[in-house]
Amino acid sequence: MKSQKKVCVVMPAYNESGVIGGVVKSIVNELKKTRYLFSVVVIDDGSLDDTSLIAKRNGAVVVNHIVNSGAGSATATGLTYAKQNEFDMAVTMDADGQHSPKDVVKGIDEIIKRNDDLLIGSRLINSEGMSKTKIIGNKGLSIITYILFGVNSTDSQSGLRVFSRRALDSLNWKTSGYEFCSEMLWRAKQNKLSISEYPIKSIYTEYSKKKGQNNWNAVNIIKSLIKRRIVEILG
Image (tube, rainbow, N blue to C red; front, side, top):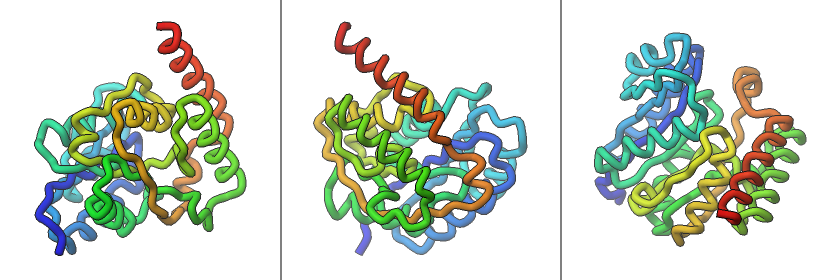
């Protein structure tokens, strides 16, 4: 039997009006089948469309950034909301429909069962559905994450992550873009948080392919991570 834990689903979003309604509605409907007390919180990261309005109409709480601040910054805002509103745990998921609501619930169940602090939903444990280009890019960044920070992950760039209350209380990072995915693992290691993974499906539509990162952006991510590592070594 599932416990009556409070779960905050954090969804960073930027100009996602075309899909945000369906994504919010699907996770709300899936969580209603469980015994968890939950809230879906969309962090509208300075969108220029109706992302906020549509998210609210479909059952989400919306926190607005006045300007676009980056995925790392939007995720930090969402986790701060979960911390300040005394949620027992939080889950981050993408707003473009890439993540299955069933995988979100599975992650919540798993982190409770395992008693971990940070649980990563890995697309690379079973990479069926992912393009070879994305597989190479994600594996490459995971290798860089291990080399720079000593954290081993099959999918260091996954946006589906589950956080314990301990993780909410202790995790902070300094990067604001997508490089935060790797930095978060580094900070978790520094705080001696337990980190594990579980397999999730890869759901790629033409829309999500256009919205996602490309491998050229990985070069900028690597540069930023190396700079951050050097600054802290010298500091």
